Amino acid sequence: MNTQKNIPRGRIVLLAIIIFAIGVIAAPAQTVPPSAREAAASPQWAPRLAHPDTTPHKAPARAHPRLCSSLLQSHGPQNPLPQDSLIYANGPSTGLCDIQGCTVDAWTVNFGYAVTDSIGAGGNVRSFNFAFWLYPGDEVLSLDWSVGTDPFGSDLGQGTAFVTDQFVSSNQFGYEIHTGGIAGFNVNISSGNWVTLQNASVASGNPVYWDENAGPSAAQDSSVGTIPSESFNVSGGGNACTPEQSGNFKVVHDFSGKEDGGGPLGVVIDKAGNLYGPTQYFGTGTVFKLWESGSAWLLNTLYNFAGGAYGAYPEGVIVGPNGILYGGAYGGIQDCGYRNGEYCGLIFGLRPSPTVCLTASCSWTENALYIFTGSTDAWAGGGLVSDQAGNLYGVSMYGGAQQQGVVFELTPSAGGWVESILYNFTGGSDGGVPATILVGNDGNLYGLAGTGGANATGVVFRLTPSANGWTETVLSDLPYSMYGSSPHSLVQDSAGDLFGEWDYWYQEPQGSGETLGVVFMLSPSNGSWVYTELHRGNHQVYTNDVFVNLTLDAAGNLWGTGGGAAGCYNPVLHGYIFELTRGSDGWQYSTPVYWNNTLFDTGGSLALDAQGNLFGTTIDCGKYNGGTVWELKATQ
Image 1 (tube, rainbow, N blue to C red):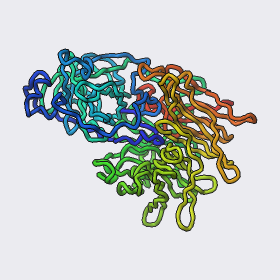
Image 2 (cartoon, rainbow, N blue to C red; image 1 turned 180 degrees about the vertical axis):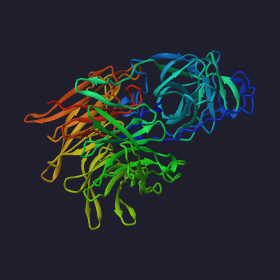
Image 3 (cartoon, one colour; image 1 turned 180 degrees about the horizontal axis):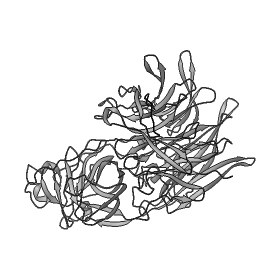
Image 4 (tube, rainbow, N blue to C red; image 1 turned 60 degrees about the vertical axis):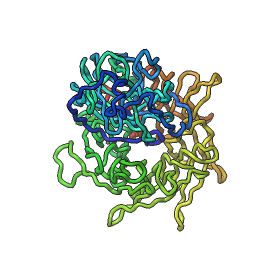
């Protein structure tokens, strides 16, 4: 059962707070007043409630209005899929109700408190949508959920979900009413099952209230007892969102969310044509191997992460020159100084066990190469690349001397791996929040940063080694874009040209707008670099037409994936695989695979084999809604 969809590392939103899922132990129910309004009069329960006597204080103002964010930038369908339907509506969101018409209190689902509510209908559930009261300026980042046959139960599934937070309005008491969606479920429920929320997270640390309504069922609280029901909707009933077969496109593995894990995020390929990749969910993550045997693809789970300090949620892997798999993961030192309770992160290596393995399904051995030490180190570093000497390079989007991110190097030595911070970003003209890096043909490092520069929307940079350290040069300032640029997917061809992607906010003449993707080229010319836009998303047809990832084939053609949705509510989805081919008259754009009304929730790295076959992942969808590895066969 998928908990929530992640986000590709290239996007800033992908570094939202992660909280480990925990079980809830039900306490004996107590007799309480029938409504939160009456309970608010008692000192025993009043601190748990939002009510007119509580005046919310101001959190930091938002940088910009809440947007209809692209489904492909998130970890999956945060709105119901077009194939799904509303299964159950547990009453209205009461924050906008007249005080005589319904109750206007709500119960906290953070600070260690948990609230559970019954579900009054059955069916195949794929998404939940909840209503919250928040302090002005806050938004819910993540929360722990569970679904069970009993109050506070988790036998039908549990986990931590990033939340798609949508501002609705302010109520008469000064709170903001938000709706928050979590999706990626694939569970059959019955009438009388229960959903539980707890450990909701906001950056400010303020209370988060699950909106109480006058709905038909009763909720329970682990330390209070029965309370009036809370506001939520349950959607589902649809089928999988990615087609299994479409021309040269096919799914080579459907993740079940069981022993094989779920929520894959990109693949890499070795010289033998074997695929490797991480899974994010159904537990604390795995690394898998896929190889072709005849007409079938076989999967072996190489490693299951233990969680906590030992590592969890691997963000990607690379194949080193020695055949060892390297990647970054959540874990290591806790309370490292950047956020309370957060882990600093670690870099791991995976290699086959030194003992003889007599089957094809053998576990590999994990080794923590380096554990980041604090907020001034490469906090939550990853995005690894390697050079021919076996040195590893990566980025952290935050941390460093200026808390604007760093580029780091890990060098193998007899005593273990040694870390060096090659560059600390300042967030000024040099850029900040580095998103990706590569080792160039000339041995220099090239990368993208998401903030700073002349337009405050990021830069393309180069790091050059010298006797005195590494020197940064800004090759190009990314064009101005309202609300940021989110650059990602930097690659280089044999001629030294750089290619990448970024997103921008397109403002419609009537005042609305959407997020669109751009594919660009940066070419060296007479000591400077020339920026050329190769293709941008189609704002005339779709909202949020963005590009997710990018790779180069042997002929120098660009391949990538993209898609989006038209409208924040009841979205019309689309997804595709695109190709940009260089010809005598410029670059030609085509979409060998295109789906209307279908979510193609792709993310992570793409891989090309020696025959030109393209491989990638969807973090959900497939037969079991646990994600897929897919292949696009090269045309002959």
